[in-house]
Amino acid sequence: MKNLSSPFELIKKAVNLFAKKENVLFLIQIYVPAAFFSVISIGQSYLPDSIKNSTSIWLTAGAAILQILSLLVGVFVTASGILAIGKIVGGGELSIAKTFKTAWKSYWIFLLLSIILTLMYLFGFVLLIVPGLLFVVWFAFAKFINLEKGSGIKESLAKSKELVKGIYWKILGRLIIFGLFVAFVEIILTAIPYGVGSVVSALLGGLFILPTYLLYKEVSA
Image (cartoon, rainbow, N blue to C red; front, side, top):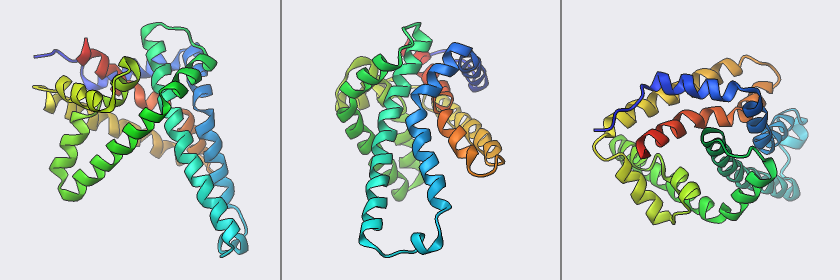
């Protein structure tokens, strides 16, 4: 039975790592593209009603394209964020250009894995809460494995499931606490007016991933 740190210890370690000047600057730069689309979203909410309610096919198509781009960029930023966190925890070079380059090489398989995981989670929760929770815990580390080990989709899912074997409830409990931590931070950020809080939230993406990544490193050690 693996001896794991408590969720609060992992969150504390994550915050301390994130708060280091070189780390926070590195991660914020990684998440700037996500923040950019957050700014655009805020700007759209301030458009005149005549534009927001317009039935123009061009405006509708433009909004749809923008939404797709936001999703695609979001996946790329997530991949870059995981790689960046890996460098911070493992002591690698904190290079924005190299991190983006590595993320791009793995982008399409990571995108496909992300789509598959999203569909599995949705399908699981539509059926019942229990299958959904099973999928969330079993495949909690699949994205990390995919990027760090260069594993294929099937292998990443299988390895993640193997890592949580025998410690399902420990992993579930920690993931719940991590989720509450993220929710707490985001609730605080909503108090910042004019949508600034959502932009800050996007820039803090690295902090939100860190506790789960640290748990992954403990489980896979």
